[in-house]
Image 1 (spheres, helix red, strand yellow):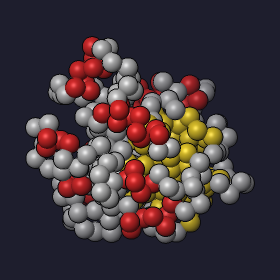
Image 2 (cartoon, rainbow, N blue to C red; image 1 turned 60 degrees about the horizontal axis):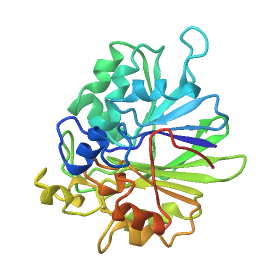
Image 3 (spheres, one colour; image 1 turned 120 degrees about the vertical axis):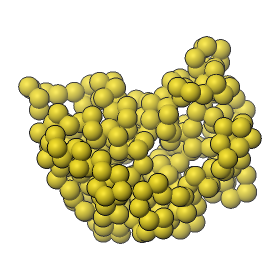
Length: 296
């Protein structure tokens, strides 16, 4: 199976249009080694012919154009076969509206996410006015054939983050995906948003590749910079550093590739010459960039 990181940044991208933090300033000025990044999304394929998107970011059109394997083949036939949603966040769903010119969208989402995008935020009703939407219910903890020898198992990711639309604590509001190549038995886990790793640790066992939430380095990162009034955990993201941080928990795991995705523009690990980046890499973790491709 092949995995391509379409977008590796958190919401807003890197640089973020309204941010003058040290990282955004550095990437605009070219004053330090760092690369621009689009908003978080992934593509997976069993054969590099048909591709399944995990989330559809507001940058999805740019991401597709930057990935020749995802370009149309003849007329308007597309190798994009379906979209799998981890949640109903705008950063992960607005791109669906940009795919409306297609002949229809096969959408995998939990009942909670579908209800949010239909009733709370009527994105799906808007999309259905332009093209058919074929909903495939995602049932946590059920092994589900995806096609081309791929399957997935979604798992619930508990969060106390305030929901803008719909209930706050409903199961299935946020999920991760364990993707498996049925021919080899090898698996990858995509977990771009997680508040606490403890409830999902068993879902990581035996995977060959882990693409995991790297939003903030420190829990108080945004508060300290004067950019927000909530901590990383309060926004649904486990920080990398500190007691209970993801680095200390994930570094010992026997996983071949451990890659931080969904990295916020304020996170110093985006600066390739930063001591924080060096510490992360010394602990066996990678920092994703747009276009990174991994064969699992």
